[in-house]
Length: 391
Image 1 (tube, helix red, strand yellow):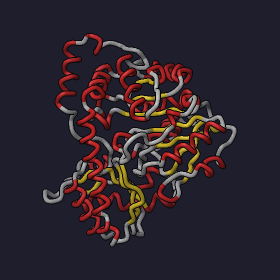
Image 2: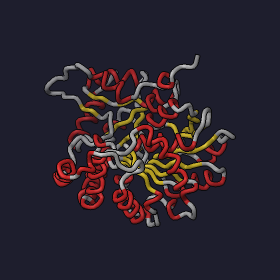
Image 3: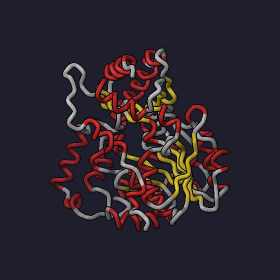
Image 4: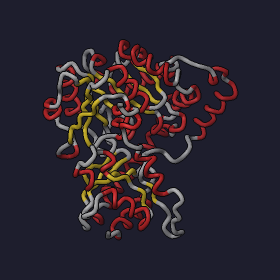
């Protein structure tokens, strides 16, 4: 008999890595450095928290079911924000609100794919994307990245079959951190459009892109919504991780299909989360610009400090947004080293094998460093500990 779908995929790396430190006792002079998960560790700004409190106390609708695709004011505000950011014309009816960006991805796959269909996904991949494809009965076709940790449209085209329904891109990338050039994203759009596929572009980390202006021109393409499904998250921008508010942009026909999925899972996005996201869009753009500069400074700290590791044989393969992706110089696998780093260096860091197909040799050589939660001093401490580590 076929296995239940949850048994066909792996344990979330975040869940698994937390088990490595559960009950561990770290020395007072060497506290744990947790660079495993990319998420804000602080509460939202005071004004946003006050808006959440006001909504909870004074708005009856904050406690009731709302529209499946999200509240009208938030959809309108996000459409305006996207139109400004991408220098395009995005309409509210092309935007939907979801219970986090992971749910936006799940809804897109539900609307696109049937049993044993295929989706092309660059490797290293975002592990939750692979997990959902497994649980949806959709085959994830790995597209191994090349120079600069970038995928190649020609190699993607060679993987297309009659069962292919979509190509997935994440930019700035998770886990590699790299920002995909506008021309590369455009080339994937053209490939998808010419072959009758959807292009799913996850820009969860768009607010921390080092480039100014629109990172690509997809929203300016005629009939963009016949090909593009765009994903976004409010979690990173406004520190709303616990409120689970994401978004997607697509054609009204595709949103109609996604609405069926969303209605059966959460019925509607969190009302309080939506109130927070709307207040953030309307009031926190200057604050968010400061958050972006802080993340860009931490990226610079990674790049400036990496020579101490390069001298030991480490390689910096990618860096940007919340992540650095590195190659280690040791004979042991990255998973073996990751477990030892917890015990011997008080570092929790995810091995590249958690972002790869089982047995992929590159995964045994690589790590993801999620640096958004460590300041410059923490990054210096991380590199000092890694440089001193010798298995």
